[in-house]
Structures are given as C-alpha cells and as structure tokens.
Length: 233
Image (cartoon, rainbow, N blue to C red; front, side, top):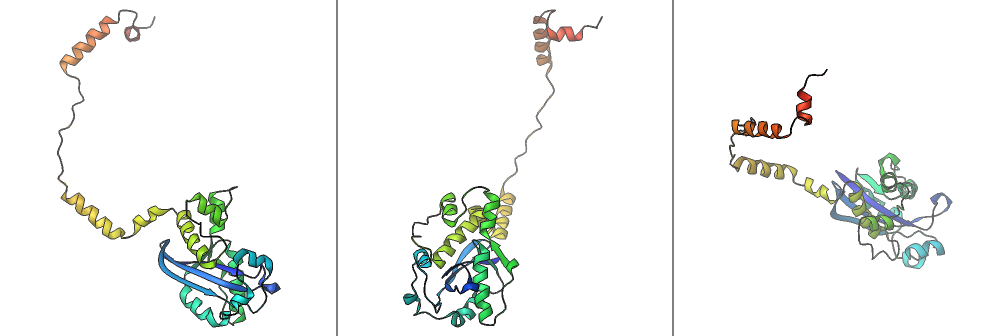
C-alpha cells in the first residue's frame, strides 16, 4: 500500500486571505515503511514573509526569491503523489493550501477524503494527551533533536516514523516477505522429526488406592471426608 506522508510550510494560516505555500516535503511509504524516495521543493510565494511565519520556519522572502513559483513545480509534485493517499498532521491545513495552489494553476483539487490525518489518529489513541509532532516523537522515542525550526521535509520524515508507530509500530516490518517467511516456516515444520509419546496414564494404581484408603482411616471419625459418607438423620 503506497502512501505519501507530506508537510508544508506557508506564509500564514489562510490562503484565501493571501497566504501562500513556501515549502513542501513528501516521503513515500509502502506498507507504512519509508522507501527512501522523497520529494522536496522550496517555493517562491511572490510576496513578503510575515515575522510570525519567519520565526517558525526561518524562510525569508529574500531567500525564497531564488526558487521557482508553484506553477513551475506542481507537475513534479503531481507525478510523485500519483493516486496515493496523502498523510499529514492536521491534514486539513496542508490540504487547504495544496488545493488552493492547485486551483490557481488550473489543476483539479484533491478530494479531502483522500487525506489521512495523523493528528486525528493520535487524538483517538491518546485522548487528553499532547499530540503535537514533537510530543508524539517523544512518546515513541523518535529522535527529533534536529528540529530546531519547522522544515517540510524533516517534518515529513519524522511524521513517517510517527505514522508507522500509530499504525502498529516496528513489528509491521515482520509482514515484509510474508510469503517467503511462511514458506520457510513450513519447511522448518516439515523437516522437524515428530516425537511420539505414549499416552499418560490417569488411573490410580492399586498401591496408590491402598495408600489413599489408609490416609482416610487415619483422619478418624470426625474427618469431613467420613462425615460426608454418613447418611443424614
């Protein structure tokens, strides 16, 4: 199962109010495991960078002027994503910006039902607990020490590890090569010599019955065992 874990950085919170996409990072995963294939682009927003956004990701308008605008990179993004599901943390935010940018270049927007929101998954699994990306990295002992500022590709790579843990953890790796492992196990079973064991006797021997009878007599007339045998009056 191929999915694309992705993250975006922007100039703000609302594309309908003039905010724009400035970075996109994608990580390909198959059966919840990263394949090593990534897509990463900085995007010239063709506008200024608000101070609040700059403090979050550290991307200035001056720096981004040297990169292509979205209309020049969206075809590569579309090709990389293909028809796979899109996985993001607080997916509605990232999907809102991606779809706004796609609409501006005349491309069909992505259906929001195509998105998998890891924030929603985390909230269901850990209700009442902090579920930011940093908090989840800490919960799952994922090293995020390089995350000094937000960065789309780094955050997508961290999220891919978090997503694996949210979907069941590292043991999912055991599913890889399932048929091969199954065949190997069958071979091991087939080669193992079956040991025949005689049925274990459960009936007491005559000697054991005699010892038991002597033990009951030794309990005396007041023993509960003997009282149970006496007829009621």
